[in-house]
Structures are given as C-alpha cells and as structure tokens.
Length: 245
Length: 246
Image 1 (cartoon, rainbow over the protein chains, first blue to last red):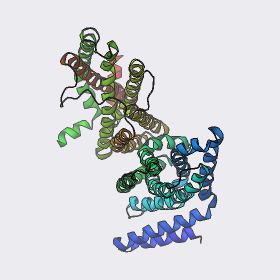
Image 2: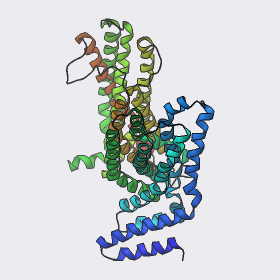
Image 3: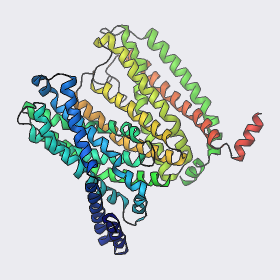
Image 4: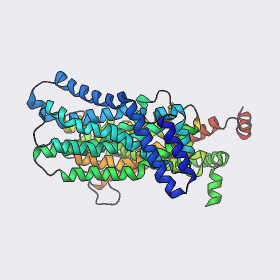
C-alpha cells in the first residue's frame, strides 16, 4: 500500500467517526497525503523555482545590465516573475487527483469539500509560494535591488502568494476537467491577480523609498483574509462542476 | 413570489412575455439614442477647454456604464441560475457576455480616441483605462470558459461561478488600480451627486445613458429569444411555432 492510499484509507476511516473529529482527521490526512505526494514528485516543486530564476535572468539580457536601471524595476520584475511561476504550477494542483479519481473520492466524503480543498491549497502554497518568497531575495541581489527591501520582499511574497494560490485554485478547479486548460487557466486567473500584484510590488517599492510598508502588508493581509474566507467555497463549487460535467 | 419564479422557469412563458415587451424597449432605445445623439452632437454647447472633442463623452460614458452593469447583471443571472436552476437566467447570461465585452471595447476605444486631443496620446496607464482593460479580460475569460466545455450544463455553471468570482473582484481591482495611479479626471457624471457639468451638456448625456440601457435590455430580450429557440428546439411548442411560421 502506498503512502497516498494509506492516507486515503485513513481519511475514509475518519469519515465513519463523529463529524467533528472526522473533519480534523480528514483535513490532516489530506494535508499529509498531498505533502508526501508533492515531495515525491520533486521536479514539480523545483520547476517553478527554476522558472522564476530563468525569467529573472532574461530581463537583464533583454533590457540592460545597467545596475541602476535594474534596481529601479527590480520590485516589479521580481513580483511579476514570481506570480508567473506560481501560475505555472497551478495546472497540476488538481490534475493528478482528477486523473486517478481521488478527487472524486474527495467529493464523495461527507466532510465539507471547501475545507479539504483548502488543505490542498495550503500544501500548494507551502511548496510553491513559500519557496518562491524565500528565493526572491537571492534573485533580488542579482538585480541589485536596493538594500533594506529584502525582508519586505520575502514577507510580501509569502503573504501575497497565499492569496495567489487561493485565487488560482478557483481557476484550476474550473479547468481541471478540460484537456487543454493551461492557457485558459491563465486567462481566467491573471486579471484576478492584479490587486495582489499592486500591493505586493508596492510594498517593496515603499521599502526602497523608505515609506511605511505596514499599510501595504496590511492590505495584502486583508486580501488574504478575504480570499481565505470566500475562495474555498468557489473552489468547492468549481470542483463539483468539473467532476459532474 | 414563488408563483413568479415558477413562471420564470418556463421558457415558453418567457418567450411569450418577451414578445410583448421587446418592441417597447426597441422603440425607447431608438428614440432616446437618436434624440441624444442629435442633441449631444449638434446642439449641446462645445466645451470651453476641449472644444468639440468632448462630444465623445456621449458614446464613451454610456458604454462604460453598460460595460460595468452588464458584468453585474451577468453575475446576478449566474447566481439565479445556480440557486434556482432557472434556465432563462443562464440563456440571458450567455447573450450578455459578448455584448458586455463589446461595450467595454467601445468604451476603451472611444477613450483612446478621446485621449489624442486631450492628453496627446492614444493610451495612458491611468486608473480607469487600466481597470476597463482588466474588465475586458474578465469578459473574455468568461466567454472563453463557456466555450471550452463540451457539456452545456457544465459550461453554464462554470461561467456562472466565474462571473460571481469576477464581480466580487471588480471593486477590489477598481480601487486597487485607482490607488495605484490616477491621472484620469474625476467622474463627471453622477445621477445623485452634484452635477459637474452644465445642464445643457448633462441632459443629452442622461438621455444617451437611458438609451443605451434600453438598447441593452431590448437586445438581451431579442437574443435570449433566439437562444430559447436554439436550446429548446426539440420541445413540442417550438416545433409547432416553427411549423406555423413556415
């Protein structure tokens, strides 16, 4: 029995218990299963990071290697590239589960699908958004990002990418049943990413100028709170549409 | 209330009632738009700063109003479809999407043309232009998603969810973009607040806005009727209707 089947069996066993306990067990089992699966497919964790580094490498080559120029556009470049890297990884969020049928099992459980989907999104953020946020300062050095903004860059990306994962998961859930959903997914999701991009890149910009960054981070937090409360419902509804359709 | 909702469930009832309603809306749209156009283009005074170029407002503002209202109506019909499974609501949402995208494009295009004499450039990354452009992308997303599904029911429900997600995001996008950068003049047209322009310029604009809304309602009614015929083509009453027509 593989680890994933094992956790599924545990999740199934949890369903037979009382609803309250069962929910916590089911969410925990989903979290653990997804973590194990993602860590086994290491390339899926590494690819967005490599993509991020590659895109950042393209800009000095395409625009100019002049440090002053790069420093001026670095906050936006880093944020846009990280956003695209996160977007790239979204297509696989539900794909494997859809293909092997475990998504259907998830739908059949009496536990609220929204919370189980939230657990999956949390794993996605943990293995995509968070590594991107931790890697961004290194790429910031290469773009001669002014000192004093590195911590803000990492924090804003960590906060913002959680919203990106949640919003993106809606798009991923809507397109998981389509055979060529990749480009469509970006068409659906990118317009919704704009507020996060504005305040994320704005936070880094403010840190460079020496303005207060707390306002930006607070708004990023507010966007995350909103996404956290509403997106799981939309994800669950979208998954039901994709499975039943 | 329930009796009314149950009636709405029946495409046949809607087909009959819309046949009676649509001539009124078409007539209203025609009269209002013709009056508004002639008044706005020929009789309203020229702006003391912008000269005659300000007359683009009579197309630009109504189109921009509609562009936003149509998205909201699309989300509302989507919600109605998801909650009460009323097919008419989804048919209306289907025909609204391309119309909304077209209105957004008209607003963007007329804005760009207007930008040449006033700002000296076709495009500015200012707040309202940018959020309009994003709105256009949201419309295109809904249209593309609807087209991507093989089954009509899934397509309808997916498009409804996306329209609802979009409508929650529109104010957030709008305010964050506004916060990001603004260069556009503040809104000149409000129905409630203080009127920011002289009466003889404002009245034709009001007429144009009302005309555009009537046009929208009329067009949605007409196109929903053809959508009903298309989707219900295997029902008996539609067949009888077609035979009668032949």
